[in-house]
Length: 417
Image (cartoon, rainbow, N blue to C red; front, side, top):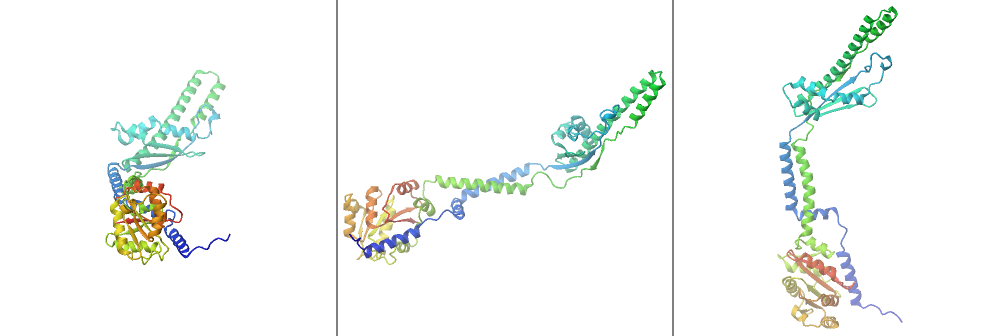
């Protein structure tokens, strides 16, 4: 059996549906749309930035600047045992020497060099001292951090010099001890051969190097503080405030019980909204009619059986209903108020009444059952779902999630401003 050719009205309605689907298709969220979400909660976003920047500025004022000075020295090799020729020429253990340079004895002497009357300076120096050796070399860096640039340099140089002095003093004491021991052994022996051997050892020890090393790059007072200045703190506050503000704005937007903005309604409906301004509602309704294929208000010519109007707030439905009565030609369009529609029994009679009265504009009640609302929308082919800034976000979201309109139904979210 041959398939019947679609009527003109069916073809026109299909064309209108395709055009509406293309026009109302929601594009993937862009970065600009994310910024738009923040923009509609701009007071929260700006408040977070201002609060963080004020906190950062206060922190910058209370945090004292600190300066880091560095002294570099080369450590010469010294024998661990001048009496044992096998220890002469051994490689410097720079890690061990770095630990010695940061020891309590060295820092105590360095602190006394700089400020002998400051009892807390030795412990402060150890807390702000870093000694690091260059691997596989005899080079050592001494870093000191202090609130005073000049004192940081003085302390770094003092630590280096105290370390070298301690090292030199230790080897000198060791050499003197061995010299005294050999001298006593010479006095105690009567053998000339033994005395000669001891004197040779004594001469060998006497030429032992006691030169501990030298400072190759003394510290100078740094000109730039290690701690961040107020501008840096403000920048950190700006970045932190922007992140916190964006998060707070998203959270506030998500928790807002009202629709508040047209783009939030767009997110609920998953299609762009048609804006109807209170300044010129008739013009907004005409633009909405143009979008569904009835630019001149002739629904029949556009292949449209009618328009179903629904809102959770009766006041909004009434506004759009009255505007449609003014915009649409009264002779060619029928109108049914919410009370008249409620008088129609649910079921197939809804579509029959609409078909008999087409084109028909139907105003539904906020209490209209969802099944009856869907029948009306499917009968007219177009449904205007109305909302305003004060509308309930949850109620609209539940409506769009629960409603299962036929594929041919054109759904138009209308936002009254």
